[in-house]
Image (cartoon, rainbow, N blue to C red; front, side, top):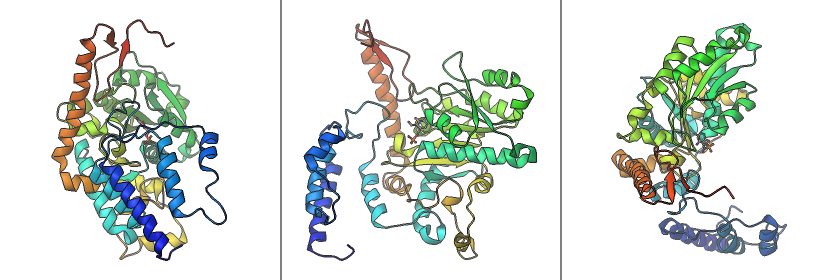
Length: 404
Ligand SMILES: Cc1ncc(COP(=O)(O)O)c(C=O)c1O
């Protein structure tokens, strides 16, 4: 399987031709998922004792299976939060795989981790967080939120031995992304969801909620999670007043900007994120609004030592990576994963090639497109906006239509 023969050469040519065609195709065919039994009927069993051969397997993928997917980068894919990776970033995703870089420790992955860190430096600069702030790329927003929440909980537990036996409690709003609730479940923490009076969570509401906690629950409170761009509406919580409360109450302040984080690069809306510079940790997904291919998230910490205390794995075979001479930045020490792909490399290459100004322009254009769409909706008597557009999200309805 590792030798280079004619089959391998032919398969390589097929794959490269497909990749070049796909990367340069501006309107890939809009496929649609089929039932698994229908796909099985068409392609048959593909994993067999003898193998079906590269040519046959690739043909099945190209002619049948990929057509049972919806290309998320299609210009008319307007559902959910689509990805729009740059062609440079996609090309470099191929290079990232071909280079077989183990991205856990500097000792093996130094050059690749250097690339990631260059991109991370730019992301961190967008937040305005203080000197010493840094971060790592993760598989996405869920893993970034989980990594941050674990760091928060460990910091809280390290304050007092009494906290070790307590089940943690975190507070968020009911507009927070489902992954926050899911990750609270993963770490077996309780979660209190504030139902906001207005469209976003304010420090006042947070303070009132904390004031109402019984003493036993106040002791368990270790983190507040605000949102910098809700997935459904692009709404940003009142970060500055929430930061005031978190500082006063001495609880970890995490901001989930998985979707909205890209907008930090846009001067027209940056002020909406005032207060982000006071966060303890921030999630930003480059695979959402920073033109990276899947999958690429990022978690940023104000205090990297606290993240390291929470995540650094100890094991006899791992100690070599921390030896003198192997010193450098070890991404695995700051998030939940050990072995990892250097998934920030495609973002780095695209940023290095195009420069950050092009990113700013592209993100501003996304925001402008939302405004143009809103105007077109307002101009049509049979449509109405549910609320003014926020970031790149436009919510509207067809007047008189029921869900049916
Ligand atoms: C605000 C927010 N947080 C977290 C996530 C989860 O991110 P991922 O799907 O990359 O794990 C999403 C995904 O849409 C999101 O919009």
